[in-house]
Amino acid sequence: MGGTSTSAIGEGRLDDTSGGRTRLAFDLDADICVVGGGIAGLTVALCAARQGASVVVLEGRQVGWNASGHMAGTVMPGFALPLPDLVERVGLSHARELWALSREGAEFIRANVTEAMMPGIARSEGVLEVSNVDAGDGLLRRLQMLGADFGTEVEGWQVERVRSALKTGRYFQGIHYPTAFQLDGQKYVHALARLALRAGARIFEDTPVVSIDATGVRKRIVTPSARLRAAHIVLAGNTHLGAPLRRLSDTLLPVWRYGGITAPLGERLHEAIGFSGSVSDTDGIDHFRIVDGDRLMWVSPETTWPMRPGTFAGAVARRIRSVFPQLGQVEIAESFGGVTGQTVHGMPQVGQLRKGLWVASGFGRQGLNTSAMAGQLIAQGILAGDERWRLFSPFELVWAGGASGRVAGYVVSLWTRGSSAVAGGLARHRERVRVKERAREARLAEARRKAAAPRRLPMRPQPSDMMEGAGEER
Image (cartoon, rainbow, N blue to C red; front, side):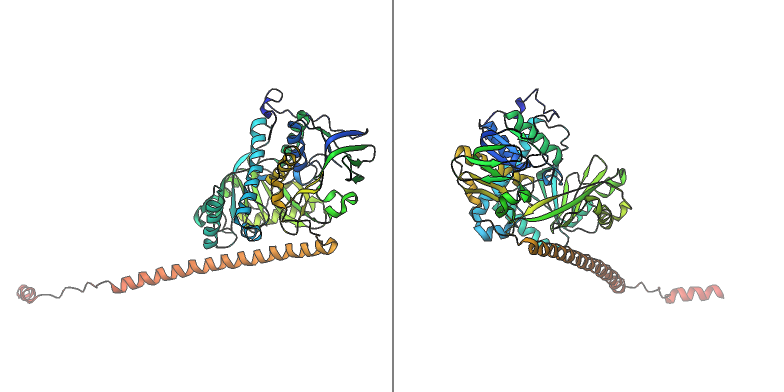
């Protein structure tokens, strides 16, 4: 990525001003028009503007209003598609290249946060992925694949270490990613917008796209109050691209994920959770971490239809209590949620649909690093001829099933949660049975040991002793 270092911006610290984000009310020409003001779109804008391109970002609402600014904020390599499935789909060598790209996305975010000294970003290190079932053999295979085959820094945690950090019997083994991290997603996306503005990009909020004509050398974009022409259009608008780009938005299954942040819990929170990073389970059900010192952020419920985030406050509180009963009744002080677009194949959609028309979408369950990676790839593809975006060619646009797909997605989500609960319950039951069996075996072993020990019989009196006793009686 070319351009100047972000540490040279202003006086070395990125301030909180966010000017320059008004509604587009006049016609414009630009090299690149980005549709969507989330992390992917803003990363394209930042990288391209740093290389001298004229960039315009059109956001239908406000920057970071949806998933980019309202999720858990975990940054680590990887994709929603499980690694063994990725290898099976494209082969080991290809999978390694894709994994390396996802790692670059994570490092891009880390560099921005570090160099620009983004205020209030609340970065913390380490991610712990825990298993809902006793899966020691599976843990070893996964560690082997991540470490030896994909060069990822990971640590395997046995049950005792996991439960030392998380005081609950809910989880068994875990995989620790010490170089992964998390941050305040909403503050990051707004800081990213400010970086893009300072690099020379122009961002227009409350400016939905009415229509797009992608034919010709100069593409045409129509908004409610202005027209724009650009050599390249980047579609980074998730499920909200709507009628002008129905073919693309129909390839995404909209999934709303909700979460909450508790009121301050004091020292009891640290007694229950002794891990400062974020924690997620391997089934993708729960994702939580400590924020603001003594509050717990917890993301769990999801639906394929929109609902008010506050509707799920009770469900979040009950979920917390089921995992950490020692916390008691917790108050959910803040609720949040956002919709993500999930693809049928589980990989993001990154690349060029036709000459000059690019797509960066499908980031549901992918993590912030993947959005950043897509933005980098597309900016480099446009301005430097970098064709690594072709690594995503095997993952084409696949129709997500419309309303039927949403029903099916909701049923699958319920089935996943139900099967996870059953599997976890059985695993904990088997663990209790093993504990009782070991205790019984220990008692039997102790009884056998005592039975086998030689008995000390009372000493029989010797004849001489008897004679002496008799003499005394006389």
